[in-house]
Length: 334
Image (cartoon, rainbow, N blue to C red; front, side, top):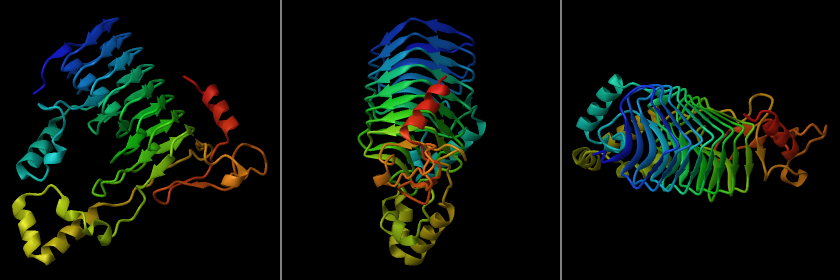
């Protein structure tokens, strides 16, 4: 169940300013309303989310410090438990219940998260789920946390994301714009599109451009364009969360198992994402010298050849040298 919240907002156009919220199950919860402002607040050490908006519209979260909670700031639909029941889809009743709720759901949209500082949150700094569209996440500093996950038609712009495990992560995420972010010093990936779970639908239609990627073991990774084959999934299908009766039938009937595998392959279609906007790509600090393949014959800050993005067929066709990237980030700073 939800548990206690430091502040629960059930009305429209509330203004919450300069408060300190600490040591609760949840920090600040916004329920199904519109037009509220949370500003200059100190929110810390809450068990679950520091700030959570559920089916909210036109809220603004600005200038807050959100630290050491389970997740810093999140957007979602309103479910009676902490997370949407995706992991229970092996149970037909759970899947049917989720589909019915989603059909009735009001999306969290047109919210703004701007110039907040988020540090030391256990799971994610900022989460925008698939029930959330057309939100803006701008000018935030996110560091020493788990990872960032951003989903479906949101603008992620001019944030500083530092020293986490994964800087910006898109999983089954479509039509997002990740631009002018500084993503540095993560332990695994700077920007990653895709996951190790091959049964997740590929992300598509995302734009990643004019980002400054430095100090990450892998600055950029995109597996969405990978075309999966039966051998890719063969050893994984038995580990899916399926009803036990279906698993027993697949074990007894190889033809059924092959049909199930074929159905997954039919639905898991590749995606296509852009790693440049047609003129400007991203700065990648392991691709900015001639010996790394960055050959800039006309000295305009963009090499003649593109940079392949690890994980699949994606290419940044207009990679940026450090000086050009810095100039664009400074010129277009919010």
